[in-house]
Length: 414
Length: 158
Ligand SMILES: Cc1cc2nc3c(=O)[nH]c(=O)nc-3n(C[C@H](O)[C@H](O)[C@H](O)COP(=O)(O)OP(=O)(O)OC[C@H]3O[C@@H](n4cnc5c(N)ncnc54)[C@H](O)[C@@H]3O)c2cc1C
Ligand code: SF4
Image 1: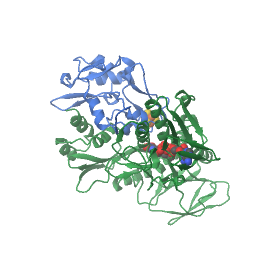
Image 2: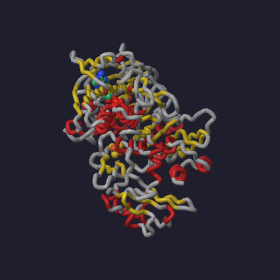
Image 3: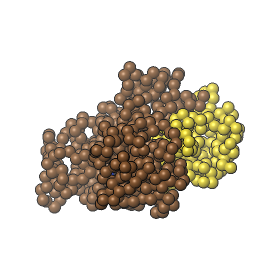
Image 4: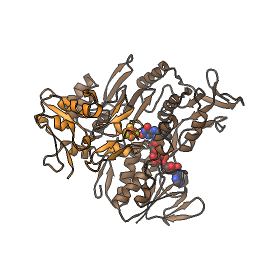
């Protein structure tokens, strides 16, 4: 069997490794279009800070890892797929044949259409190449404007602070991390930033970026309200979209991402998709792109098992994130917005920057937000994903939502 | 034959020797807050609780920098302090909550079976925690629980 995997991020790499285990004799070709060994985007923030070097971002540390497993890794970009002929056309004219194909091409950054967005010094933070450029420009004490205070923006913010730059955050929405936190939690993070001397401008838009030509902090960032900002670097973190443009005309069904079923199979036979590019079943019975690392590796594993004639079915992806903002750790899980006719409980301790909110659907936990707590937070995933009935513990949690770990052990170790 | 921790809550007396031994063995101080095994007190019963070194190892597969690996001698999933960048993704990926962030070091800690001589089992005076052959009958509720929370009910090759 000949397997071709397009995209060498976590989804592609885990899939290749899983295929090797499931089909020891199969022929595995892993294609990646970035001029690096397979690496992890999630590790980039730590490269920015200098905690790790470039090699520290590589998904696997042994140089011979892929050879050792008999996985052929090739630097190449897929430009077209022909499901009828079962071939993938590569940039440069070559084409490769497959029996089973996986598309794990991840996502690409979206640049908002504003004047000056293509100026030198205006960068996304998505690839290793972007990160090298940011390291070059974000000298200590320089001013940096961060466009977007979403999850990725906030992670990059943390790295910028640790690099010793003076960051200003500009966010269109009325709070930080609007898709990961409710207003109370987002507000508390913003307040925390203020105590750390980080300027966060919410409900504010960048309208244009200009080059003043001056030596120090040459960029001028114009806002829809308030005075313009100066910067040596503007980091654009205003969102990403699945890499699906090259699928046009292939007949592979796409919506926001590639539509896959619970086996991670696309609408076309022998073609699977995994990771940021895949829009698959989610835990709530819908279809979502959950562009996070845990989903990428779960997709990769399950898709690969099925590609190798196994029968693995996915329970659905669960949104979950953990974020460290200048030392304040926040996390959110599942349906933290709550569900119709569900119940919720929250506790806020503003002075100590602690917050817990739990969302229930009947006797089950369906979502949670935590600030200022790191102990045993994985149990929140466990409680949600196992759909355990909390019984008496529901009332106890409604009274004191901090008792998460007791509720978990009590409900699962009867 | 690989061994694993077998926990029998019925024998636990809440003496906390395991938490003490674990924190001393791994962190060099008697501090239950830094223990990788936790004893839960439900008044009528006491439940020692730690990582089962589950086969799915969500922590290990979620790690972006390959900082968690299998110790082939013990089967334990072990965190390398040299490689861990402290991103905490493993702490939310593990549905058992047994990987925890250590604010002092900026890295995570989890049970590593003490390289094959678990201090908690050695310290337990009642045999509530025992280090036994993995196929010990009635072996572990938590393993079965792992099946229920698996993100993919994988058959065939899994
Ligand atoms: C700065 C940063 C911080 C992050 N932090 C977190 C975090 O804390 N927690 C978390 O859960 N997630 C985080 N993420 C998101 C996480 O990195 C992604 O969800 C994950 O990388 C998705 O994996 P993937 O394999 O689907 O895609 P990717 O990692 O994007 O890999 C896809 C690969 O395919 C390549 N490719 C694309 N098109 C083609 C083509 N036509 N031919 C060949 N190759 C192609 C791409 O160049 C890329 O190398 C972060 C991301 C960034 C950028
Ligand atoms: S916190 Fe450390 S061990 Fe855990 S996923 Fe991140 S790098 Fe890996």
